[in-house]
Amino acid sequence: MKNMSQTIRFTGLATAAAWVMGTHLLAIREQGRAPLQRPASRAADLVLHGGKIVSVDDRGPDAQAIAVTGDTITALGSNQDIQPYIGPATRVIELNGALATPGFIDAHAHFTGVGEAARNLKLSTAKDWNDIVRMVAEAAQKVKPGEWILGRGWHQEKWSEVPSPNVEGFPLHEALSKASPNNPVWLTHASGHAGFANAYAMKMAEVTKTTADPPGGKILRDADGNATGLFNERAQGIVGEALAHDRAMRTPAQVEADLRTVIELASRESLAKGITTVNDAGSPPSTIDVMKRVIDEGKLPLRVWMMLRETPDKLAADMPKYRTINYGDKRFSVRAIKRAIDGALGSRGAWMLEPYADLPSTSGMNTDTLDDIRQTAELSIKYDYQVAVHAIGDRGNRETLNIYEDTFKKHPEKNSKDLRWRIEHAQHLSAADIPRFGRLGVIASMEGIHCTSDAPYVLARLGPKRAEEGAYVWQKLMKSGAVIANGTDAPVEDIDPIPSFYASVSRKLKDGTVFYADQRMSRMEALRSYTISAAFAGFDEGIKGSLVAGKLADITVFSKDIMTVPEDQIPSARVLYTIVGGKVQYTAAQ
Image (cartoon, rainbow, N blue to C red; front, side, top):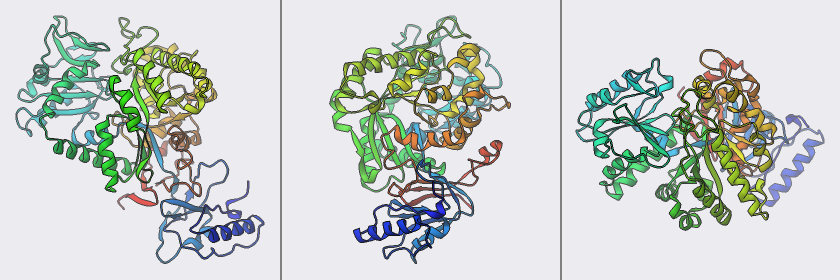
């Protein structure tokens, strides 16, 4: 492989003549002759200069500088190589040794959820249940009677103490209800797979002792049969319907205005964290319609790749209508169908092959039915969609793989590896199922940060044997031939990729212990999982995911070289610039 000082790569320039001149220059450089000046054609619009540029391109080495024309990478090379691309109107960013990588792609986040979280109570900082009660009490002083108080991010396993009284480790609603007697309160668990309501909200939802658990859900009750306030998995819909009914009083214009605000907040948050593409893990047609209008107005500053989440009875009609590939200057795609076969480990909703070690009365639960997922798989073959199934528990993953494999066998005309069907999370696997990912070509869309965030209670839930066998087994999956795409599951976690990258390479917990170190990723494996592998998971590796002439100029610039600094310095790196399509969309405050 030639040194970057000996080669410079070109994509098609403005004219055929310029292309010929450019390839002639490349040939001369490869022969080791003195560099020539850039051929007569327009100068680059943007040049990043004087840094370390990791291309994530197997065919070429890294560089010091990069030139961008329009939304496309024109060339990479040494500072000297790229100097001829600088004209009077070229914007030049001196990197001063900073690291530039392909734009980070969050392979699994909830885009509008990120925007909603920016408007609601942030409960992830709560040290215990009393903290949450206090936060709600303060919010109740600022809103009108009858207005909903919403929040997200609490996690009982991360509190400093178990609440008292409690049922299965979850608090009872009385203190919360006392703090907010005149407002309905709905607080979503960090996982998104459970929620907590106060008495006012449960009254609005008409929850009584006789309210039945819905299929795939559970209302947690005390010894007398009274609802504690905790609604697990599909039971969240009981309170959700009351909230939706209240929100239905808004006009269509108000609904769209709210969604546009959420999209703007989510875009701003993502760009500030270095994310150039968000893979949205499931949104309804109404969101897709508004997203397209926002793009038509030129108001979406990053790229969104979206999974359609629709009720089973509407899928057949809506799938052909909403499939969208690189709409609006490659800003937006709707390429997959989202389903959820189980819940989350934290709320004991993940569907396990054996009972939970810390609650033997349950093995979790099946949420979307197997028949629903089978029908979705068939429709996806028909309408050329990926299937993306949320599966966290080992049984949830096995059942999903079974459905995938059965569908592939029914359609031998399809190469399963070309379909690139996905399992979202794939957190806890049986040893027997790990090789199936590579064999079937199923993408493991996982979140590095979940490993270290969940690890403190994984051993309690699963026991050491199951945890070692199949908990966040990145190396085992990669050795099977599986592609791993990384992300955050925001707003379950912060959309910031730096903590997730750090978790992927260190698996280090807050107490300094390392969670099964043999499954750590190398730094390049982690970088690939956030760039080219995440692009591959969305069929976009031909246009993004690596820094190559001809690809989109989506670039993230970091203050520290996260590829080489001592491991414990990775978390202190910050994003300096986020560039999407050659436009600087975020600049860190100096």
